[in-house]
Length: 488
Image (cartoon, rainbow, N blue to C red; front, side, top):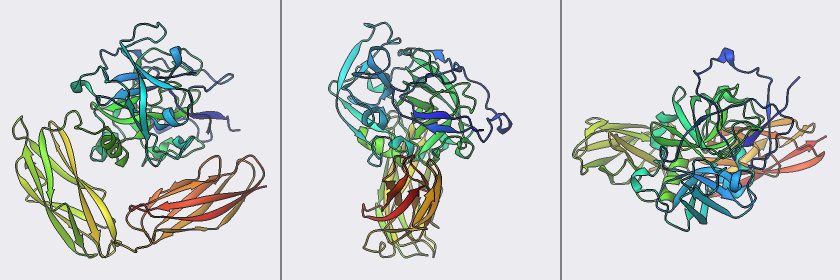
């Protein structure tokens, strides 16, 4: 029999001491599935297993960018609800569900190592505004990803610029490769039924998401980082949501969801992709560890027919610390396209390299945003090149279709369909609405003519349900189709 457990967006807490990476042979049985549950700090786990996942006590002095997220009615000490990171003068990075999925006026408290003893804090400020990632789908959106938000506070935060947390972007994908390990920080619970409010840290490995499919919702490796262990020997827990997962001094993810018993993998919202780029743009200014050299493209856009190439000059300038070695790379390339740098991808700041984008005969027409990254000892910088292939793609938006267009399942059962998208420009993102559990798409992003596998979970209410599938391209144009799910 399957033993039901509960996966939750971890308005999260922290857990046990680090252990060596476990092998596949040590993993939990494949038929042990955790079921999704309410992703807030109000989670109640009465009757669940209570494996203790104690972490190591730490301090704000040792981690000066960490800050406690509070809300009226919050489940932790003094109303603590989430954990977050100071990333600017009045900017805080946290999980989108900490802002969207919870009620009650929100504020942030800084400088306290133990929220169980009121009065130790040095600063408290209210929320002026926040922006959740534009593709976060609203309450419960953590299930499908994009669980990141940038908060603007009413007052200046008492953290010097040199101690602001550094946020990863699409040029930092190596930091979330399986085999890396990082530190998670949070004020949450020490077990599913344990206490909370103490600032703790733990070390967890980064895992291949293919080995983390132990929940009733998919761990999407494009948007999520699977960390920790399948036996939960150390994990995030209720109250740690939004807290940082740090690799090599950089926040590569924010705590998003996991098991309500805090005894399985901890899932982070991935920042080593366009989500991190979005967050950095919302934060504004210069990231800590950057700004020691300059990077520019001339021209910043170009056009090539499929099978042809286009070039641009990548100009670097030395910063106030003098020349440094830089490594150039390009990412977010359209299908079949390669990038080469001449005379080399290794340059000294102050030098110019020629970048050539060679498309393939099969590269679809469209408009693509290519990211060029320069990495050096002082940090990294990115620039964007707009590549138009052919005529830029059809003028109309994407047109999705579902095959089959209907499905019948028992309550709680699963159905699959193939989604084919025609038309549209550049990367096309799929999303769905109409069910309590949004559909899952594999992959979630396709190009014109591409297909994805859609998996839907039937509600526990019998009847007929309409699922609206939306395809949105890189220009913002969208098309929809319907899938009919019958729960018998």
